[in-house]
Image (cartoon, rainbow, N blue to C red; front, side, top):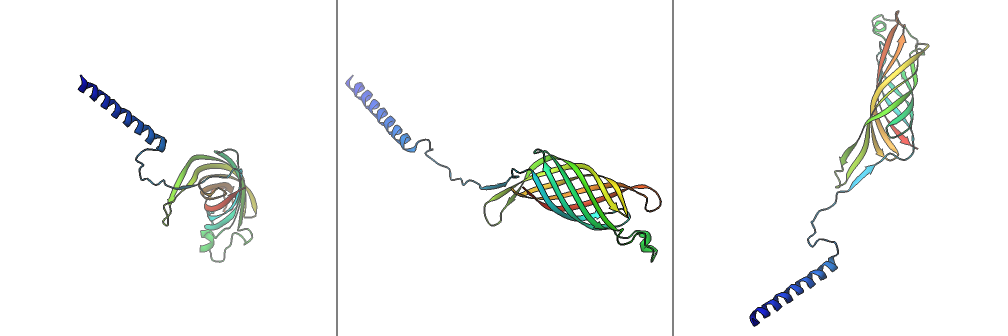
Length: 220
């Protein structure tokens, strides 16, 4: 009986000592695990659209003026963001039309003067960000990953085109891709189709002029 009593007391003492040591270690470490994994957190620098709703910028690209070749186009754009998904924008663009096939083959034949070849348009459009997302870039000089907010958008609107000494009502549809480089700076790549009626070559038809452009804009 005495041996069982001694064993019981020794076992209880060992249990009590172990429990005391555990409480002491827990008090020193707090909520930290005893074994911490050697994992370095990945640094991500994310650019967000600033809180301002106005956006203004410039663009340049190529516009295919039907029957008058493709020409360099440039201009300006201003937009107001109604919400994260919806915006309205205004555009002005400038280009110089080329020659028709008839003019090239006819020698000295000219359908338009130099002034009449000046191509100018202005329009207002309603836009919709249909596919917001993110694009990622890993710096080759560090372990930093850059996250850029992006938007794929559709738009439709109307305006006017001044060309061949006439002002023509113009409908516009298109789409674009926006990448937010900084919280105040973004880049756009877009394609737009301009529709207007013209009778310059003898019969009235709907001219379809495709514009491909890229540009920078700032938020304020």
